[in-house]
Image 1 (cartoon, helix red, strand yellow):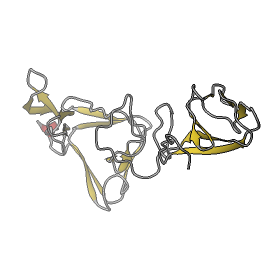
Image 2: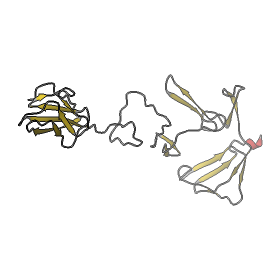
Image 3: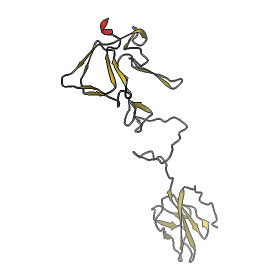
Image 4: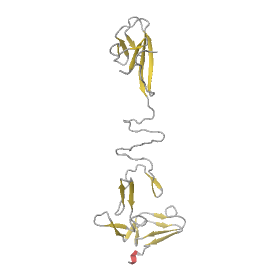
Length: 241
């Protein structure tokens, strides 16, 4: 067993041990495969030598003894070869892949971060999230408010079926507080072909309605009402007001 202070290694550090038999008065030894400067241990007949006092190793290839060896001396080199840690996050890599689950106990902080997979939000039954960085609520009354104390988002959507009442909400003078009133446009124009069928309007029988009294279909545009569908324009009879 070598005498002197041993090299302390972690399980992730690979080393190599090289031995040589000295000739009379030999001082210079070549380390097969080289070494990293300041990452080598040198032993003479099992006794560890001190760098700078007993030897020098400055070029990554050779080691020079400051006291010549005797013929038959065993000179050993313990070389730090590499630091191997599998499946780590490398700070300077642009793209990395981690197989398996990633559990984070703190916050995930990033700059210009986006999720490239579905994020649990669907639009018309289709998952969204691939490349999506912003959810934009447009139109008066379509808003969302984040509550930092509970980490929740309250979403208000105007129009029937939403949280803003029928039509588009009319707010008070502060522009944020909803009044008990909303408005509905008098007319609307259909500008693209539209097939109303079982793929986009319920099962075999359903009612297709609009509260807008005047629906104009652009020239050359076809609106097809499928089998089992009943179209009702101005379902609230607003045009009679």
